[in-house]
Image 1 (tube, rainbow, N blue to C red):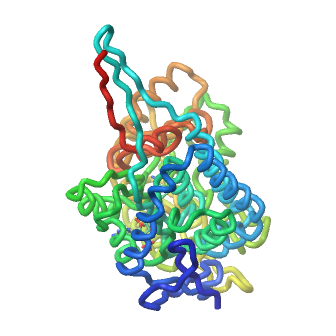
Image 2: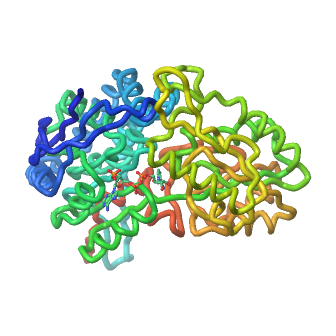
Image 3: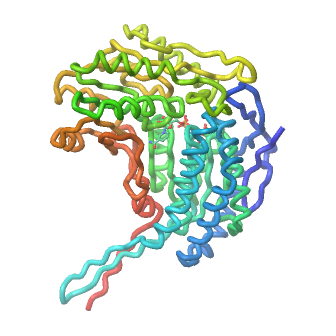
Length: 480
Ligand code: NDP
């Protein structure tokens, strides 16, 4: 059975305590690898190594760091088949999705930030006849990156790449539920010739390994993506230590559909925005709000399409819905479907687990589920389920739609389908979210700010926002 190792000080090593955790393949329910159950001692080793590496790494020219990151991007692309297979096995997502989205995006993350650092500007303000101010932006030192299981390599590299590009050294922890692609990345970092200690990848449990990163005095910033409760816990530890914090948290995103939209495009995209990656994308639109005049038509067409989605073995190229990530997550999703029914919801399709014949007989599959007839303030419409479950509800006026969309503790993203320009700009202004998509979903330009408001997070990733987060500005004022 494969044993995953920590990547510390340039080498792949066992955890100090020699303890391991089982790693499951969600599609089969079987243990297929062992993960280091790292603790404080492993984090201490990683931080010491990163501290030693920092002076040289930060002193490199941006051009030199660009070259390291570009080499790693190229290696990811060259190893796409192996990485996609590993991601699919570890997470349960269709291999076609991993190959088309997750792994190419991981390579893009490194390429994007390798080049972004070459163009990263700083400000200068002149006080006429008096002085000139300019801002220096220095790397922070050793930073911690903690990422979730839903888009494992995609989100892991989204943090590591800007941190390294800006001249920081990194101690990173992938989710213990999906560690394999991060392990393969550490092998590629060795191949790319990364200096010892610049990047350290330590595996283990959130409450042990993750918290050891958050608590460590020599780690200057934490970039975290995960659940809102975990984010609150991390903030409570990191804030009194005056660490910089970037928190990308949960969502309960509205998908608002007006009768004047391009219907076919909307329908096709809404199936994707509801169920891609088994609905386990923080940006999935889990609350579908439909203008009443097309509600019945939409309901019929949508449910017809959802019923045709192929749920099955992630290795099969025809599969559109793979396994959800773990048994406990499958149970959580099913318990929410039960809550929805108790709340008076009517299940229009799905609503149950699926048993797949053959090698996936013990896997964790949930049928894509559409529920109607729920009030806006019920738990199903207020709490994040993070699975293949959406609710649909009609609305009558623009103001109704807006107030339903904003009636949530979360504020990550929203999608609006309309061909009315005035309406789209009104919604773009008044939706309480960090991201608004009009007539599209998940269309990403990596230069744009990414993140949520309300309980969906603090701070922004993406483009220069990420480079600002991973640097400390210092103003210099020179009197003439
Ligand atoms: P969790 O919050 O459970 O975990 C995220 C990461 O934090 C994991 O690596 C986890 O480790 C670690 N962790 C857990 N507890 C602690 C702790 N006390 N201290 C430090 N680290 C800790 O989230 P999930 O992995 O379950 O991911 C799903 C969540 O992520 C959803 O809420 C989703 O909305 C959100 N998300 C947000 C995104 C955004 O951009 N806003 C994007 C993608 C997902 P381990 O897994 O080993 O426990």
